[in-house]
Image 1 (cartoon, rainbow, N blue to C red):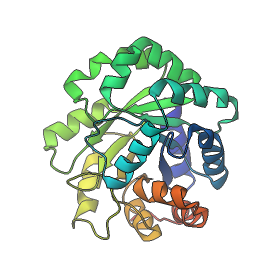
Image 2 (image 1 turned 180 degrees about the vertical axis):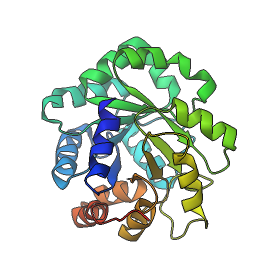
Image 3 (image 1 turned 90 degrees about the horizontal axis):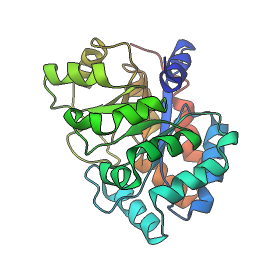
Image 4 (image 1 turned 90 degrees about the vertical axis):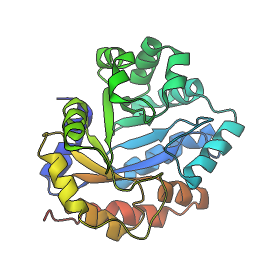
Length: 260
């Protein structure tokens, strides 16, 4: 069993839910990456999703897109992010999950990326613009480095597609909660609990909810029928505002969820 999957299952075995914050590497400068990650660790997060800025994102909403633009303006690249992470990898106590697009990996070189990512503390990778059918482009190199390739499952995926995705996803299943891009939302579609429970029937890999989750009530609601949550845009906004109180309250909410 991979470290990422084992870490999430150990949290749920304790009666808690996984909490994975998303941060944009280089937003505010790469010098902020180390203190931000170490502070999130201190708050008790399960893993940390590290976004790599890209010029043509397809999944990012306005908040994360603007963060990416700021990071790019600061000269942030995949290489400089991995280099920075590696410089304090010995201080990491939680697994990192890189959220990047396919082109930067290909430009970097898949084998070199996997090797350098492993040294940087990355134990999972999410590539939203790479369909399952093309995963062999990167998966062998990632597998050799013991890095999980996490698959996204959308609300519009057919049962057949969901089954294929869940059986191939490693570490956890990234279950998208909305039809659209990332960004905080006040409400979600009904019967999401049935959708998530259906996903879980295909696999023993943990299912985490992502996109739009932005309040402690959202964390508790989704945590009641899945293994945990990923919170992105709200975390990015809080970091810009240096609002650690809100982040702490979001993390605490994941510790008080009971499965329905």
